[in-house]
Image (cartoon, rainbow, N blue to C red; front, top):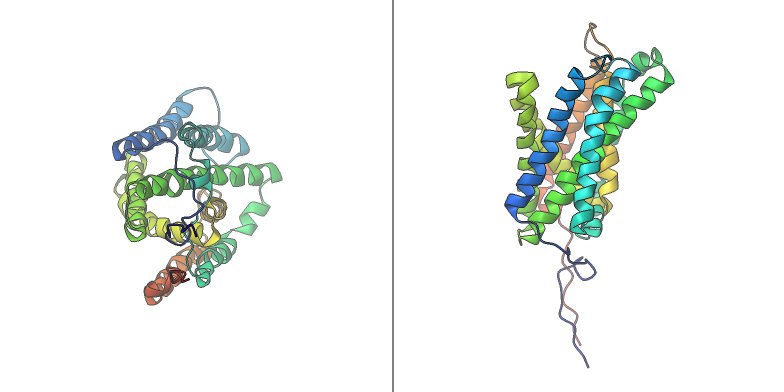
Length: 271
C-alpha cells in the first residue's frame, strides 16, 4: 500500500505560489502602492479644474476613484505577475466556525453607522460613486495586505500567529503615511487600523476567501465616510459610534476566546 505523507490540515490542496517574493520585494510593492495613492491624490489636486473635495460626485471620482482605482489595478497586476491568484483570493487555513461572529458584528455595526439621512440629501449617483470608491479601498488594501502580505509571510514559513501579528502591524504602520496630510492624528489611526487588520485577517480565514473581508472593509469605510465627508461643516454623526462599538465588541470577544480560534488538527489516520 502506498502511504501518503500527512500534511497540516488545510494544506493538502493548496497550490504553491509560482514565484517567491522576498521581504524586501514585498516592501517595494507596498511602497509603490502607497506612492500611487498619495502621489496620485496630490497630482489630481493640481491637474485640471474640478472639485477638490469628496462632497460631490465629480469630487469623489477625481479625488478618490483615480488614485484608489490606480492602486487597485496595481495590486492585482502584482498578483497576476506572481501567479498568486489562488493563495491571494482563497484561504485554506480554516478557523473555528464561531469566528463568523467577527464579520457579522462588523457588518451589522457598519450598517448601523451609515448616516442614511445625510445620504438621502445626496443624489443616487453620488451615493453609488462613494460606495464604489470605498470598495476600491476594501479590495485594494485587502488584496495588498491580507492577500499578497499574508501569502508572502506564509511562504517564509511563519506560524499563523506570526502571520496574523506581522500582517496587522504592517497594515497599521503603512497608514502612518497619512501623517503627510493629517499630521499626528495618523498615529492613533494606525493603531486602530492594526486591530482592524487582525479582524479582517480572521474574516478571510473563516470565510475561506479574500472577497468577504474586502467587501466588509469597503462597507466599513463607507459607513465612516457618510458621517464625516458627507456632513462637512456639521456636527459629527452620532451613529458613527457604532463603528467604534464594533471594535470593542470584537476585541472583547477575541480576548476571551483567544485560545479557541484555531481549528483543531485532526488525529493522524491509522491503518
